[in-house]
Amino acid sequence: MSAIVDRAAAPAPTGLRATFTGRYNASPASVPGGESVLNLSGSARIPSLGLVQISGPLASNPSLPPSPTNTHGVFTLVARKAGGNVVTLVTGPTTDLTSRKPTSTQLNYTVLAAPPKLASLIGTEGVATLSLRPRGRSGPAGAPVTGQFTLRVVQS
Image 1 (spheres, rainbow, N blue to C red):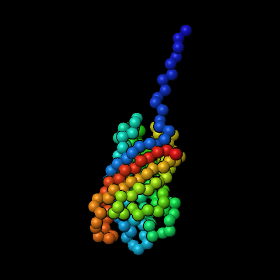
Image 2: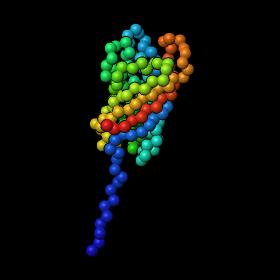
Image 3: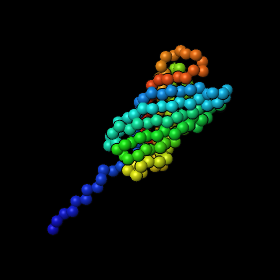
């Protein structure tokens, strides 16, 4: 009698958990009452995926009444080892993306698309805390703001 050993491939992750760091550039609204836009670019090392890059825009309109979903955007995670990109929809409360003081905002995310190796992530939801540390605290009103960000991502 011989035994058969089933060697399944390592399971794909069932959720996102990472701490991304990088740089951001935030531009104030181009018209009164418009949205400010923050673009970020960074990376994180994720077990089984290696270096994963993140980029994307966030927009928010701080002149509107507080709203739990006023801040919105789409982040793309480039996971070369997984063979493709993970696309996430991000929403959160109204926030001033161009603040010249350090800030933190809790965001919610939903995974919209992923490569076949990470297909189990599609539809998962979670929270992420975005912390912004602007460079320099002074500058002309209405000027873009640059700095460092940390994005801590966990699945709900």
